[in-house]
Length: 161
Image (tube, rainbow, N blue to C red; front, side, top):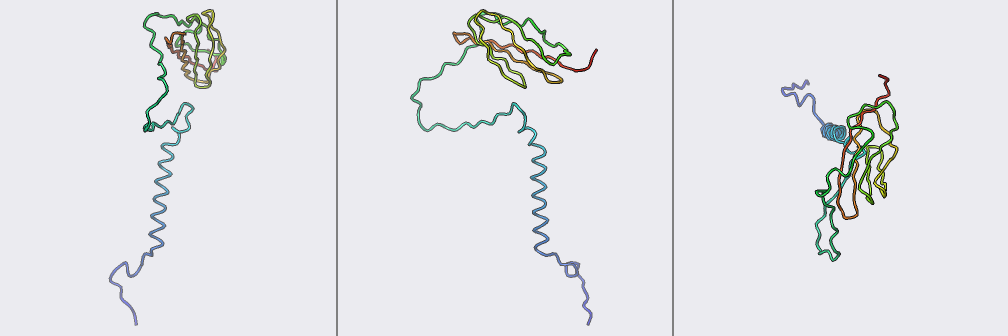
């Protein structure tokens, strides 16, 4: 006796395992797509993950004073070498300038951070640049918590002009 199928789902029944496999594959694909889009941001060198948890207990410690923006001394931090927006052919450079006496300098690049004392008001340090644009941040922090920050953008290319 021959059975006649009028409905397509009778002829090709879909099993529960097949539906589950399709659903799991779809979820894995969504996770992979999300990871491809968002993971490069997690591997950046300057990425910092921070959490702000609420405090349930009052702090008994005295508050830490925050440095004040330099409003009294104008341009006490000066960079003499190299000039901002320079295009350089050497990977290693010498950063030179003047800062307030008895201050601490914080020099930050994408590759390294340096902390230097500036006892006599002069500073000099060697930095290594990466190919392309390099943003160098120089912050001077004086004894009385006054700070000043300057930024240099230097471009390094191994090509000869």
